Length: 314
Image 1 (cartoon, rainbow, N blue to C red):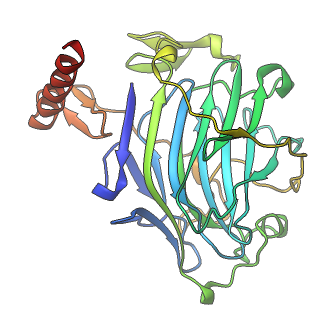
Image 2 (tube, rainbow, N blue to C red):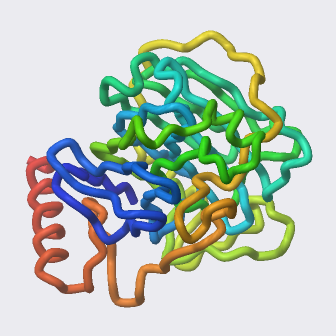
């Protein structure tokens, strides 16, 4: 299915907070780093097995401050977009497979002009064949399966986004350098703001499981559905341009594992924690709300879908 979450309307229970307290307002949900240990984030209670994630957001400013959008699997497959607060003109795109960090030649810095001053829609579109990263309708990077040299992410992913201080003095020196820190908290607070998110799962079913330990997507099993069973129903992405190819330019000390930090995880990997699953007898609506089957919210949602189908039929 596809869910469309409007964070200007408040929180939804298909995403849970950790590392701090995201706040909600007229512009959406804010992830604020004000002091050491702050690393507020939201993590989906659901997984997608190939899919598209679209997030409309402003990145946080500040030396050493990192805004992150991460897809992460229990097997530590990972697809990232990260914005460094010291430079509002670019976004970092990256990927990891099974937590492998013996080489760090996968990252790129790609253009994302004025990313702290305006809301921009960023997309990561992930299939069995390729990953495409978009910035405001511009394709900034494409990675094909055979280009990943055996390091292609291909296991069920959760969606995570939030902000953290890579430039905190307690982090390893290489991380502080990569984040272009150190972070001066007296110049904060520093906030990443997410207005909305659209998440499409390209597969179907109630639950994904690992059929063996190969780590290949062909080994993933779907309970009550099919891997790639929804891939033709996501709709097209409007592409306005393609950016020039970037060079691999990351420090070898870039941390894998998505968003790290926070008072309970400072210096550790917060991304290895998992949440969920959706309880039996509950469903998720297209607005990203998890409700009991037969609840008034779900009945209202189904009635609205039925009215929409009737209009289309006419």
